Image (cartoon, rainbow, N blue to C red; front, side, top):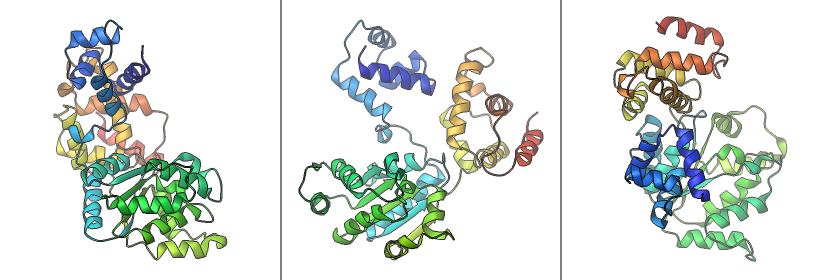
Length: 333
């Protein structure tokens, strides 16, 4: 079996897609799909490309991306950045859909999307060479260039895209703010290029409101903050976002009050990540065991029961356990 097929099977299992659903995702007959998975026929190039696009979530413009409150807020920021050169900082808690919103709007506005490597935070002081090499490679510039920063700036000047979206930006904060020096040079030397940095609340606190400033980095920090035009705290999950998610997954029996309760409860935790865990578990043990025949039959009590089974030992990530207990006792039949 090819590497792509192995990744595809893992992707389907992780997302709870049964073979019938997987064949529908690829828009091929179920019988053809079974032969493909069983190695009876070869995987053609076009189908392999479609699988890779879905695995890497690059097919979002060809599917129903949920227009959540947060996604619309990022969209609004992108519209502002198109009209005027800006440096924008946007932050939201983990699991609220920042990455999906960033990728979707990068495609929507023909912008450049970049996700910061986890390795960037390994050192207290920035390893500028590694960061510059990674961004340069991202823009198709060889890391063997004599002056890769100059080449990167020239490349960006010739690029028609006017927004540079940097996801996972909290990984770029170090005591010497060295990574930001590179971004500052890009911002200063590329006309009409807006920079949008998206990160978690740790990023917001460290960059803008932390009382603990590292003295060695104050000068560099102030140079960056002087360039920031707009700072936004993006929304946590709202009742309407829960409604969109439930409808997308064919769970239409929930009431408005139940949307609000789920938004209040899950908005304090991993949000959509947590909802997705419940959905996958429901496919396996509620639909799979015949408790309900289809997702449209799922009730609010089913949803809460599955969540309790998954998370009975997990405390709230935000707020205290008493609040979570009060919620469960008040809303679980």
